[in-house]
Amino acid sequence: MSSARIIVRNLTANWTGHVVNLVVMFFLSPFVVHTLGEVEYGIWSLLTLLTGYMGILDLGIRASTGRHIILYLGRGEHDKVDQTIRTSLGIFSVIGFGIVVVGVVLGWLFPRFFSSVPAEYHTMVKLLLPLLAANVWISMVRVLFSSVLAAHERFDISNGLDLIMLALRTVGTIWALKWGMGIIGLSVVVVASNLAGLLGNQFLARRIYSRLRVWPLLFSKARLYELYSYGIFAFISAVSAKVIGQTDFFIAGAVVSVASVTVYSVGAMLSFYTHSFIGLIGNTFFPPVQRAVARNEMGSARWLFFRQVRLALIFGLPLYAGYCFFAEPFMKLWMFDPVKFPMESVHQAALVLIILAASNLPALMDIGAQGLLAAMGHVRLTATLSIVEAMMNLGLSLFFVLILDWKLAGIAAGTLVSRILMRFFVLLGFTFQKTGIKWKTFVWEILARAVGVFVFFAGLCLLIRWLFPITSWGWFFLQIILVLTVYFPGAFWILVPQSDRQRVYAKGKELFLRRWRCKRLV
Image (cartoon, rainbow, N blue to C red):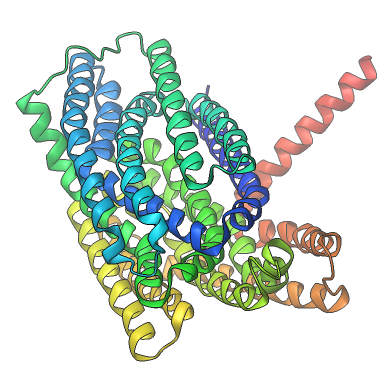
């Protein structure tokens, strides 16, 4: 299979899995929020965020393991692949015990950090945090086996298994909440589905890579040094990403109220899912980018970078810009409940969504930049930029909330300002400096076209909303269909280079003629 077809297959598989997750979230989130209520859902959000932070205690070993498996498989050095896997498993065995201890400690300290949590939940939190901490260890091992599938570019298989996990988790969530099990039931469901995913990934990884061994565990000095040399910078980037993406919830819980965590979570949910969805473009392109850099084919690496940015703009711009124009009516239809989620919460959540969506619009143009720099070995640089962005995000959010009293909007505004400054200007500047891309080329090929598409899309949204006021889900989806029907042909013509457009037209014509001939023969 050609490299282009492999990329299309993998990107399709990644996006399919993510879209299914998004659809499940769309229908399941109102049920979970309304069943638990703002306070209990806020506690659940804080628990999942805390355990999410525990995941960075692997010190970047997960990311480093995936990278070195790809590297050694490409070289055909299967002995080093084996040593890398078993050394990583040995490290995770040690780290797992430490993570559970951290969970016990955080369980006891939780009421002190979040004083607005009602007393009747304190004992439950002390029990659940160690359980969810053990789930972090399960995730580490599961991702290691998933990395073997990714190294063989079998994203279709790994995503198929993820969909099975999603089905188990969704059914379990509905069952647990229907039977009144609350947060305890949700925790058990999460751990059980993740354990099933671990066993499934191990089985599939062994089928794809018959040389896979997990025992005996190994602590090779050479592999340990190698894993940590790369992993420490991946760890720094992961910490920074957590600060950028999740510290906002802690600020809301500690400075505003635990109920406000629910409001912020609802507002940020779509933006975060979309950010992950667009980020899959970079994940899918990383293996060919890494190969191009390894062969010193920088022309191909630059071409792949521009290809990623164009894809991100075509699919990301209507999502983020659409959130800006449709946030309020969507949030009202999606979450409004007079008791569990009143109109004031709807307004605040919509404002958070608008600000976060606006912060992601300029970031569409640096998709693939970090991956390209990492492939070239500049992980120290990307880690440094991530730290600066994280600290700027945290400082600005606290300033907007504590000094200017902007509340939840201020927390989101910290993300907006820091992301525009660091991701669009600084990260792109360093990427162009290291790769030889000229700003003039980028402005003409990408930026000017992106601005034109945004203006076109914004005018289209305003026109459609004026013609068809939103009063129900039917009118809402009608507007979305009309906007996208007009948008995609225009964006394709503006953003896609003429040579690529001609190839697409030729391929479409070929498929049409082939189908027409088949029908005539029948």
